[in-house]
Image (cartoon, rainbow, N blue to C red; front, side, top):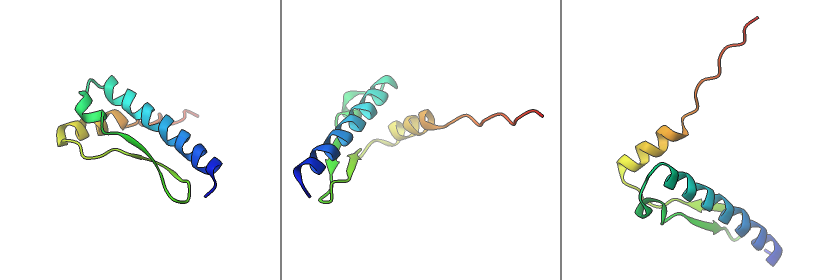
Length: 76
């Protein structure tokens, strides 16, 4: 992988990790939950976010926050 591919992947992973940290902090979860969120880049340059291990109650709050309300049926 060339350096530019790594930099691009790292930037994307870092931006995503920061967004996840902010969202978890916004849920009122303590830093020990979102502090372990880390940007990662594979050998091929693909960006990932490592969430690490979280307690079950924190995972339940995360899941509830990610649920999307069903879209209303179109009226004809």
